[in-house]
Length: 432
Image (cartoon, rainbow, N blue to C red; front, side, top):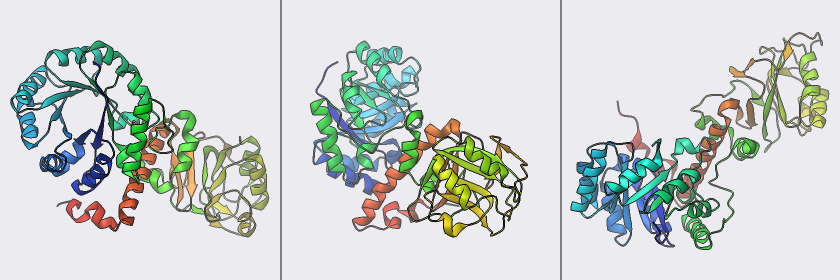
């Protein structure tokens, strides 16, 4: 059903103070509806809905409760706290939706049914409409977004099948919003593209511009990356970002950067297995390496060099992105002047002999991590990390998300906070 497009701000924070500050800045330039996100409600309780209603009485307040049972009672709780719209999961029982609708009518609220994880979205959308839902939401969840999924196809199908307004949610930004509007979305739900922005008001203006002109407004942030864009994505983030995204997995222990300040390394692995001091296979790997490759050498942590200046020059002119050695390298004074990142466990002046033991392209262990040819290797001044190729799209997007969230925290610190005060560390320390 057609209606004037509304911009809904999803406040998916865990701290009310941070959420309210972003809401103030965004509301001042054109947000229509303000959503207390599920993490915010779970961490701060219904008091945060009351806070939003008191501060923004002219805005519709959405309580993203994601109700899955006891619809009547939970809708009543949210409505009495000031919510104008309450969300119920489409995967819930029919009784949960119908009871929620009746409760909403009794307490002056409306129901939005969220179709996240519903297999047949069109069928469920029609059923929800018949049960009295006022809005539907075609929602690609955060975990789905990290795999590069999009709501467009299902959004178009749902919006054609029903006569009530349809919302779209899932990693939307100023570039993607016109497409979801064309697909039938009347309510544009935006979270990270505003809440992670250094300047939420300016971010809201860009999104408003995209909505009004129905044309993409280019952005460098708040994007999701696919298989063909992984080099770009990994080039934007740090190894700490990736370590956080992988829950600390993939970090090579004891492999130290031998690089100039600011040097970064991103590429897919070509693996080499050799023995202490045997530099034949590492040097031969240069001839097999495609441009952009990172040569990763398992020399069993040996202390006799398997790499040096001449090998580095060969790799540089071959277009290799970097070299990682679980073993020793030499000629470091000269290598520091070569624009080729080198990460190695040991430095030693003595090299072994090119005996030719080992293999190229096999599974190896480097810095305690399993590495296969084709895995992504990222290195910077903090160290080296490996990302398994089959999870690269998801991890790249999660690392981007980590970086963008840190950007927002950095901005709050610059405005006079501290990391402890912004994060409310004492409140969120683990109990017991």
